[in-house]
Length: 289
Length: 285
Image 1 (cartoon, rainbow over the protein chains, first blue to last red):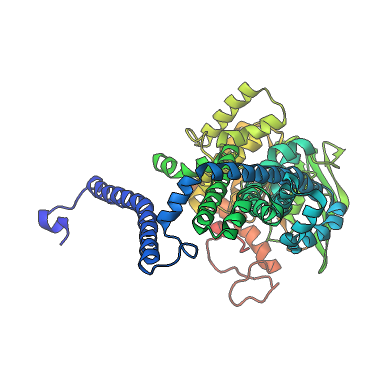
Image 2 (cartoon, helix red, strand yellow):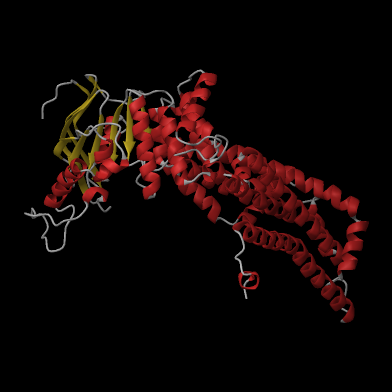
């Protein structure tokens, strides 16, 4: 039975629209709530099961500490985690900065100068085929136990996606855009800055986002192999002394560090490419149009 | 062909061969044309007849293999900047608003920005994009984007407008509207237009002359004067004169086997064309 049958008249389009709009709003708010509530509930349930399992089955603390013990350890070692975390952060940021400083110009050279691309590409690819963890000991021999080898390992792992994505992004432009620029009388420099580079930015940021997560891996690998400080070193020490709650706490700290750094790169992307905002506002714009 | 006015854009014995891995491709074969100043000239032909190549060569963006292109007697040997180009795709920059995309042309030419922006706004308004100046391309429909692209090609008041199947990707109604808008714009300005299309109706409706090209390699099959009064209206498309022109072009295509009707063997000239309305016919891609 539709309302039309009951009242003897069909509803006006305004009434129908109001009903549809109410339904949509309800559905949207419900799905927004679900996006927050579902993951929280899932994680909570897993934590409770973990806690109950660890205690109920009497699993030794050095094998699988209950979450509560991890939290206690995290709290107790907070100053230590902060100190070591800061050291790791410095290594990551320097290694990442270095991979941008080297990777972007290298990509430019590859793009602008084909003979250079031909000669350097095989070297680049083989440098990536080589397992970086295997080079780490060599770096320790060369550069000692200080900051430098960790920065270099982070750089070596992180710079490749930046080079590839930047070079691909620059080359992938629609030819008509370049034709257009030439017909407008834009010189090569202005064409690059006004058209080609902004056009490549999404691809470049794609590379930057992959690289930041790899830089974290690189720094930790460096600390594993030859460190006397940093979160990676802390993990090794906690492991060696069977302090598994501290090991978990260190892992959590590393995860937080990685996520925060990733979000910072994403923030930079949003600031540099404002069209991401434009796209998110597209729905409202179309309705008002 | 008699040419009372001297050619503004001259194309003499133009040939273009592309070297590809599958062997050379003959795109254009000794094409000669003269476009008069202030004239609207369309080039119709099947896909692959080199008409887009012809436009790119006229713009100085693609080198010729043989022959020459001249503008007012001067050889075109580098990209020309005294023109506006509209491509089949809008070629808008995603990170610029509608207004920003139009202003790109003004910035590239270092035009005075306040007056250029005033002109840009007026142009956008004239094609019905009032209030959409601050919208980004992804917030606009296909037809709106192509309008922005048209405004960008016009902001510097170019003496020559090149259009490469500008409405090819649009729906029929939007297309009709844009064709009307374009006629309006051309009536207001003294501008020479080279219009590439594969729509017979579009070519007849807009043009002073229509150049019909053969399939690959592209040669000039025939040049047809369109003596219809302006401004032309949509209703005029059903007039006997209009359909006569359309039929004339259609029959050239039928004779060349570009279009084939049931029962006709390829390349055969039909003695009697079966009754059909040819004015909305487009050559299949």
